[in-house]
Every structure is written in C-alpha cells, then in structure tokens.
Image (cartoon, rainbow, N blue to C red; front, top):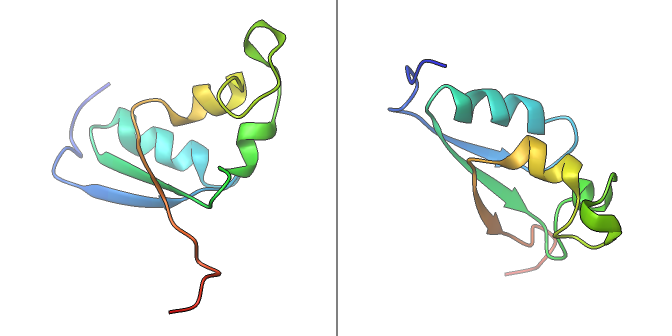
Length: 80
C-alpha cells in the first residue's frame, strides 16, 4: 500500500468503531497513536484468542486491527 499519509499523525480513541479507520491510516503511512483507557481497550476482550489464552494481550481481533500503531493510556474520567 502507498505511504502517502506519512506526514500525518492520527490520534485514535480506542473503540470498536474506530479501529478499522486507524488501521487504514496506518497502512497508508500515517503515524497512529491508539489511546486506551486504563485496563485496555474494549476490543482486547474480543476473541478469537491466541493459543486459547483469554487475556488482554492474546486477542487476535485486537492484534489484527491495531498492528502498526503506537499505544498510550489515558484516563479521561480522572479529575484534575
């Protein structure tokens, strides 16, 4: 795929509705920063699972949609 968007940085707020779009941006060359809540994105709990391990690091769904992205944790519910 073309790297035509390599001059862009995209901030993606983690969620099942945003992952595909972020994947397309990253495949087109953009730097994509995935912002997850504490405890990880909801889709880390989606199967299928790598080697049957049901944990936040083994979701094949999450791996598929979030490769080539950077990740950061941000608690948007915290006060000051």
